[in-house]
Image (tube, rainbow, N blue to C red; front, top):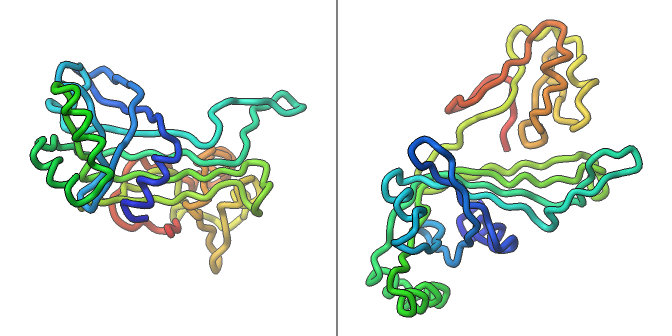
Length: 234
C-alpha cells in the first residue's frame, strides 16, 4: 500500500484514536488526519495540550480506527457479531511541521490549506507529520458473506520503517499431523510438501493451532524482523 491508499483508509473512518505515552502511562484521544503527501500523514493539535507535549518528548504515536460500524450486535447464540468491514492501525515517528513549511505545501496542494486556515484562526495550533511508520489493514468478514475466508490482512510501512512480524508460526518441530489445519476456522493453514504453513494474511492469531498442536510446534512471536520459516507474507 502507498501513503495515499493508507490515508484514504483512515480518512474514510474520519475520527480516529491517537495514542501516546505520558511518563509510562498510555494516553488516548480522538482526532483525525487532514492531509498526506510523499513524506507521510498529517494531523494537528494545540501547543497548549498534553498531546503536544507527549509528541514532542517521545516522538511517537499510534493511530487506529474501525469502518464502517463500531457497534457490536449478537447472533442467535448470543455471540458477538460484526458486519464486514476493516480496522486499520499505524505506529511510528512524528515530527512537527513549521507553519511556513505548511504554507509552502498548501501552495502546491489544496488539502494542506485546511491546516493553514486553522492555524491562522487558532495561533496555538500546530501540525505534525507521521513520517516513518508501519501498520496494517485488518479486513474482516467473519460470516464469510463476500468471500471464502474470514480475514485478509494487508501490512504496510513507509519512511524506511520495516514491518515487524508478530503472530504465531510453525517451527521445525512440526510432525505433519495436520491437527492445526483441521482446527483453524480462518483457513489460514495450508500444506506445503510434508510441512504445514501459516498464511499470515489470513491468520487472526486466535490460538487454536497453538492450543491443539500435539507436538508443541507452534510458537508465539512478538517481534521478529526479517523473514521467518514456514509463514507466508503477501
